[in-house]
Amino acid sequence: MKKLIWILAGIGACLTLVAARPDKSCLRLLYWNIQNGMWDGQTDHYTRFTKWVKEQHPDICVFCEASSIFQTGTDKSLPKEDRFLPGHWSELASRYGHSYVYLGGWRDNYPQVITSRYPIENIKKIIGNGTDSVVTHGAGWARIHLKEMTLNIVTLHTWPQRYAFGVPPEKREESAAVREGDAYRRMEVEYICKHTIQSVPSAAKEYWMMMGDFNARTRRDNWVYHYPEDDSRFLTHDYILENTPYVDLISERYPDNFYSTTGGKARIDFVYLTPPLYQLVSEAAVVTDDYTRPVRNPQKISNFWHPSDHRPIIVDFKIGK
Image 1 (tube, rainbow, N blue to C red):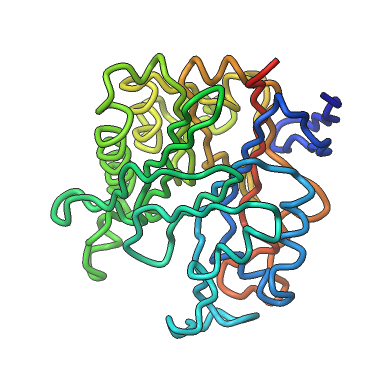
Image 2: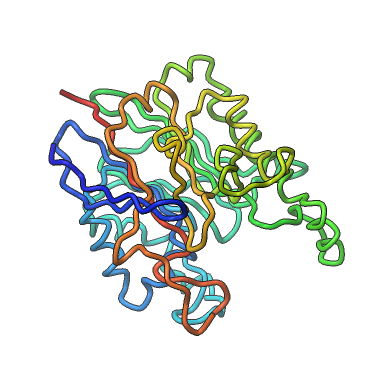
């Protein structure tokens, strides 16, 4: 396999990946939160987006915020009947060589979608129980069967606010002051894990991946953040690391470096792998290049960035000889 070119630029920066086409022994995963259904891509009918994805040669893609929401160039809501995504993901995926599309559990404007060169089996679409355990943006558990392995893929996107989900407007400031949103995210992740990896006794010996926008910090990065040790922003990832077999891919692979996954300096997008799958990783990177580097919208429309306020993550797995 051709070597990938890596540039390490220090704390707060990202790995820059120059994509070489993997050989047949490589399985490539692309994960990305594409902000508002790739709002930036509405200007050219997603030509730059699909061209860039195709150039990465991914076998599996996972995209957060996979629904169109706003009118092009504005923060005005699109009528639901005029939203191109998620209804046309099959069309977009075919433009970069993927024939299969899976939409996870979906209860608001922010679903996750998986696209793949291989058939995708739905195991469970997760939105919570509708009462005390609402998974705000939904989650999904899908499975892809390859010749060499069976991959379990869990996608998620947790609650983004400091105040808790369901808090009435007049109580949100009070809720945010004690960071009830952190506890809510922790609840969502526990619910998702209990209905996915923790429901399979042999999962630690199997090939599992869980990824998404967690909207939470990990104490593994606290040498950068310098938060108090009991800071509630760590609750979500503490639960995963203490109660599941998952390995934090980027932290484990680059323990002495910090790579932001946003336009600022925050690592809130994670790819988690079970140990057998982590052992197959040949390359991994938070990717920044001329296209993916986040640029704040010059008109300061809401909090929109171009092409997204998040950076993608690419992972290569060596799955054959």
